[in-house]
Every structure is written in structure tokens, then in C-alpha cells.
Image (cartoon, rainbow, N blue to C red; front, side):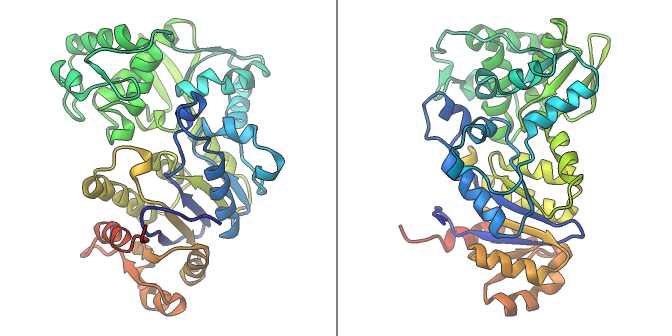
Length: 388
């Protein structure tokens, strides 16, 4: 099994009655770029994560990434997951149909929309789908950089500051600016997900929330009875069950919540093949009721990676293996067997530090109130990185 990575791989141990097996593999190539032919197919990485989850003892499998399902649905037999796959696309479509909805708006990545993943699943159940308007004009000009995203300087020129919402006049100017240059889908939705002040850059409030809300408002104006949050980053900014839109209470159908509920209805242990948006993986674990100390440690590692390594893309984050279960010693042994180079214990499992070290022979870092472990975990991963 290929565990190649720039950094040494931490194994996270948590204590939990609900057993969760997690592979966070942010090295997986960007799914939307792969669909556009601008990145390699992520399927080999998705398969690697599935094999690791299986090896670590999971009974089922879920991917907290909607766009990844495009590749999973088309995987040849020898690369298809062997574990039962809980498919968030099909489960979300079934949830919407069972609610009696007949016309929904879809907020998702350009890759998910262009491949009609959700449209086909909904239309098979008699549900019409409204999506943001897209432009065929390739974005260009001094305000656009890289993969068609607006520059940070352009945002700042319009008064945008980190995590601070704009007042109505400035917001209207920003919306006009991004839509004129990129269209609704790229300017409102994808800028929220991948823009300079978007979720993947570490921002989940301020203009990220305002731009995504505006995208949803436009879908409601076109007749959507509910909004489907069809990208795992979207519920990080639209994090309620409903939204008040122009005097209407509109249901928000969160595909990540649907996935969590379907997994919890199964016996487990539950396997999560994540890291395809590290924060979205943590969001799924939270929605499944994972212990707070287990998810808090993962989030602290994410933030420490941003501050220490200047991580800005999924691929800049650490690869992690994690198990939360009733027996920290057993979890530690399974993580070591799966390739973890050292172990980190969440606060609920910190009392097992000596036993874990003796059982595995690995270096152990315990997260404690007086000594938060996340910075040390990131430093250890970098210091013990494999020699090129």
C-alpha cells in the first residue's frame, strides 16, 4: 500500500463508545480540476484511503466529498471500494424526495454540477433542480489569478477584511464585481469555497457566508423550494437547518448531515475516507457525535498546519490516520500496523499514554490542557519526514 507523503504520518487515538476509523488524505488531487482535465484523477488516492479504512477495521465506508462520487461511480471493478459505500449523493436525493419537495436549488462545486451527479439522482425521483448561472467566458484580467480566482488585492480594494461581513452597499458592490467577472457559479459559489477569503483558505464567516447566501437567494428567486448544500464546504458557512430568504423560511438540506444520519443507522465501526477538505471531514465527525476532544484535536492540528506550514490548499495539510474507540491500546496497535509513524492521544485517552507507548514502541504525544499537542504534532510530522 502506498503511503508516500511529504511528512511523517501521525496516528490519532481517541476514546469513544462509537467507533470511528478515519483516514484523512489531503494529498488527493482536486476533484473539480480533475474533471476539467487540469489535475490527475483522484481515484487511486480514493482507493488507497478505502483500503486503509478497511485495514484499520471499518465495517462501512463514506467519503465526505460530493464531487469524489463522480469518480467512485465510475470506478472499474478492481478499484471499487470493497466495504459497503454509504453514498451521500443517492442518500441526499432520497431524503429530498421523501420530504415531498419537487424543485430544489443546488449549491455545489462546478465539478459536481457539470457532471450532473445530483441532477440525475434528483430527476430520477421526479425532483427538478435549479443551479447558479454559469458563464462560458474564461476569466482573465488583473483581478483574476491562478485557477480563475479573484486576487486578494481585488477583495481588499472593495473593503473586504478577514471574517468581517460587509455592510449592504459594499456587499452589493462585491456581488456585482464577482458576478460580472466570473458569473454566479464561479463568482459566488466557488469563490466562497476556494477564493482568497473562502473556506479552503480558512474563512467560514464574513464575505464567505454572505456570497454563498446570495447564491442561495438567487436560486429561491427562481423557484427553489429548498436549497441542497451539495458540497461539504457549504454547510460550514450555511450552518443552519433553514434560512430566511426574502421573507420565506427555506429548508437547507445538508448532504453531510444526511450522510452522518445514514452512517449512524448502521452498526459500524464507521469508516471515513476524508481529508478531501480537512475541515469538512471534521464537520462530518462532529455531526456523527464524535467526542469533542477527538475532533478538537483534529481541528487544532488543521489550524497549526495553517500557521506553521502556511497551508492554503487541501494538499498542503498533513495526512492523518485516526481511530476513536472504546480501547485506546487496541486503536493504537491498529494505527501502528496501518503505517502511523508516531501517535497522538486526545485528552480523553491521555491517561493511556504509558500503556500505548509500551504496546506500540512508538513515540506518543498526549494532548493535555496544560500542554496542547497540536503544534508538537505538526513539528514532529515535519521533523520526521521521510528522506526524499
